Length: 176
Image (cartoon, rainbow, N blue to C red):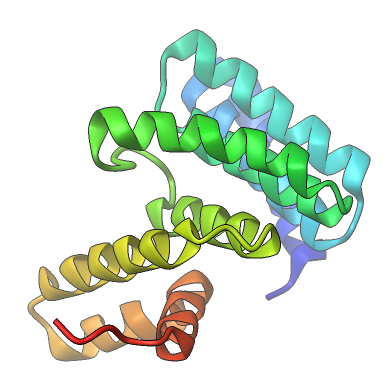
């Protein structure tokens, strides 16, 4: 909720991960920096963060590259370039089609919701199916949390989970 503070933390963590020569942490920190810069509407800096994270993750063969690609898609939406965002989402779909999940990402829910946002922007009918997948995955994760209070926190206090829930409630439900 405080992107300026998030940027400061990400910059400090990035410097530390570089000093430690921890490339995985460096990638996560660059991704976090991209997220903070996007929230601050500093689009060139956001692009730099996402591209840095993507390059490191491709080199490391890390699934976090999917988070970086999703960040680039959100950046394209912020730049009012939905067709550019759509090409990135097609790459995410290709991965999902092969793996049937976004396991290993920092936030599978955010990757899913990025796809939903892009598809909705283009009035692509696949948006509803992707939202259903996101909602089902979120509910499955919540079901694995045995403590009801923690489960409630997971669903209510994580912004992307609230967004999934809100979008789900607005989706016309099909009778099974």
